[in-house]
Length: 87
Length: 396
Image (cartoon, rainbow over all chains, first blue to last red; front, side, top):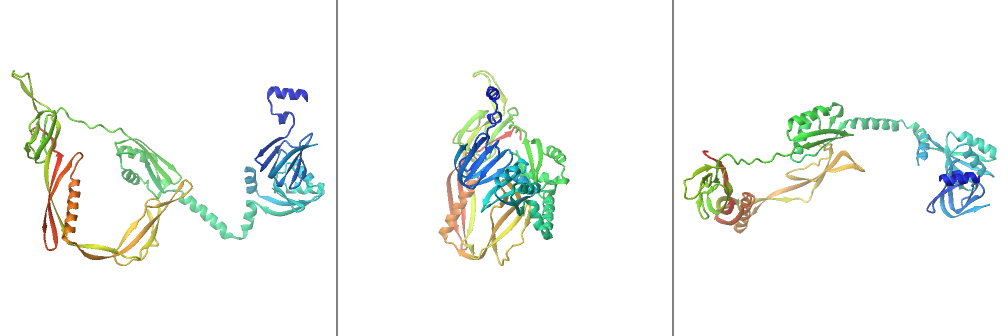
């Protein structure tokens, strides 16, 4: 794994691919896209928990909906307050 | 955006999933490559949209995860079409619309000419119309190549022409030839003669010999600048040569004008009851005027500029012309002698200004009035300062 990381760094490869990490992008406070996720762990309008590998990503907000969900990405819409990586 | 539009075209289904582990259901569905969107909680159940194709698989996922799946509604284009299945008139309407759209788009509705500066647009449009290119022409009957050749043959001022048909608009793009410069003949011997009777105020000779001086009285046809010039040294015997005389001669001239104005005048008195008419203009020529108001007596029609209908930047071949019908009655109005004289003076001045060329001026207006019982007559002498030089070939 260390070797893979080093090669990835040397060759400037995308880290989310080489290290198998989630790629998180936000549009303001309104929309959040998580690529390379490991599945939905919890879903409620005010809390969403998404598996990302070692830790899970907890999203707190209001009136959150899953705009789109596929095996590659999850798009969340709503008023997002906090993002937190939980064990 | 694109998948959502695609699923709208293919049709989608709105489902409700309830149970203890909805998250497991969602994960299982995504693992099986079933796309869903707009997922939100509604009470204890989760509502979402998914494709028709994935519905069977989702039922399997729901059974496996202990969830209850309920189909709430079908959406998208197929569902809409199913709902309209019992309305054949709607489909007939769609069919007629498609046919009408196809037929109407098979005509040329607008013909534009671009690139012309010296040539009149109306002339080119007329030439195009002679070769079947006019608003309302069937596109299949057009032969742009023949029209191109015809325009090139007809107009020597056109060096290049192209005819482009975009939708229902035909654009005639052309390039004009470079304008030939005015050729001034400096070889053929000619005199400068007077075009009018007058008194010379200024003479500037470019070539030739001045035949008159400032203050001289000249008559029409008198030579002002002679073409004969003396060549030789003073004191010795020389000879004369004929050249093309040129120069400028300004003179004071007098022109007589006669105007007459009646002391009674017909005046229009407009009624307050105006009526408006709307005309639908198809293309540039076809007018649909079905709503013309019924008018009695005499009336004026004031038309406003056509208002084009457009969708965004795309101009439709339709425009609306609004006309104002203004009925009037005619009454006789008596004019005083002074009013008639003022009107005559202004009329004489207007006419005198119409006689002026570039650089000419009016020096004075001398008006003598003769008053009759029913009219006033003005005899006006206009004193002008104007150019009276004109070339005349020798022997003419």
